[in-house]
Amino acid sequence: MSTSRAANPADVMKRTRVRYLILLLIFVITTFNYADRATLSVTGSAMRAEFGFDAIRMGYIFSAFSWAYVLSQIPAGWLLDRFGARRVYAASIFLWSLFTLLQSSIGLLGSAATAVTALFVLRFMMGAAEAPAFPANAKVVASWFPTQERGTASAIFNAAQYFAAVVFTPLMAWLTHAFGWHHVYIVMGVAGLLLALTWLSVMKNPVDHPRVNRQELDYIEAGGGIVRGHQRAGSAGAMSNAVGWPVVKQLLTNRMLLGVYLAQYCINVLTYFFLTWFPIYLVQARHMTILQAGFVASLPAICGFTGGVLGGVISDGLIRRGHSLTLARKAPIVGGMLLSSCIIGCNYVDTDWVVVALMSLAFFGKGIGALGWAVVADTSPKEAIGLSGSIFNMFGNVAGIVTPIVIGYLVAQSGSFNGALAFVGINALITVFSYLVIVKDIKRVELRA
Image 1: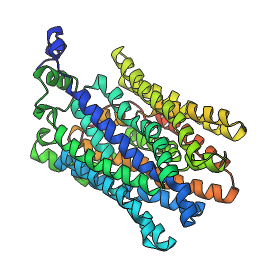
Image 2: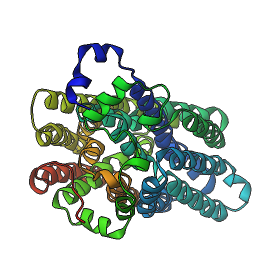
Image 3: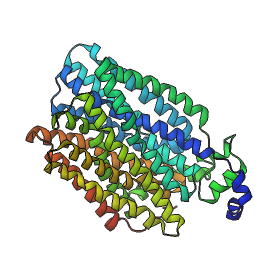
């Protein structure tokens, strides 16, 4: 099969576009993924009033999700490489939606201490259930998209985190205001259970999908897409090697990947500030109501979504213009994260609209720079994309443990969010350092025998 066949104008005219349907589906799933993570940040103020959480305890409850999420990454990657994205992702969506639904019932447990414990446990279980999601997204994109479209595809599913805030933060704030916090968990849990069934009915490997024609399949494969998925990606011996600890060791000792892992941790400090403390910052530090905070939080999210899509378009555009993969991925990341550091400026202004403008600019920059999953799809060994993505995601989501706890202590000790915003901005600058100094050429890692 040749590149010229994929590029033939007659073939292009006939080519199906099933890959865009798959991208839409993982975008919707990722939107729900992030919305379910953010339920506690929206309902947190109401739940604190009902159960008497202090800031430090709230920080630990926020972190429960990420403890399990981080610890489950390598097992999740092994499952993805062993059983494929279709089955593992379906089970993941079903379970995290079930645990979201169960959080609606913690008020029935009696004492506040029991409710706090149950909430921590359910958030922990939800984190374990969500662990395969982003590695599965990377695996699907690596299968369904050629290299020159992969940055945009990865940016689009990654930008779902902002779209979730745009759509679901106001919705969840309204549900909390109008009906009580319990209804947020009921609505989100039931919707997710239905989404698991949708994934099972639509998703297949490109080579097995009944709606994909030969022209689209050739186009994807000629551009580096792994169209046959995990079941046909190599010999049995290669598959056995791909899920073993020797491969983990190779990935963890690669300088390029270590730089990418550090950068993803720092980028996720911004993500988890937004998912956990940002609405509470608006309520406590800026004296907004829960309903106002829900709508105001959507403005930075819109900017983050716009920046996220734009970052992928810029990166793929640079590749099509003949620039190296290294430049095409690094330029948006470095520029975007420099812009994100402006979040520190919120400490020096008092006007609410200026604060929201700075937050919006920071998240626009973070969106542009959030190309880590495209880098994973570009660099992961073909035999172990699930495992490689899981290690990347594990490092990145250590920020989900550290960020809410550190901010909880900073707020409790100082009574303000000034230290918290400085902490977030400094991590944006560390991302820039990582990509400029630690990460050298961006290229696919070849596993050693």
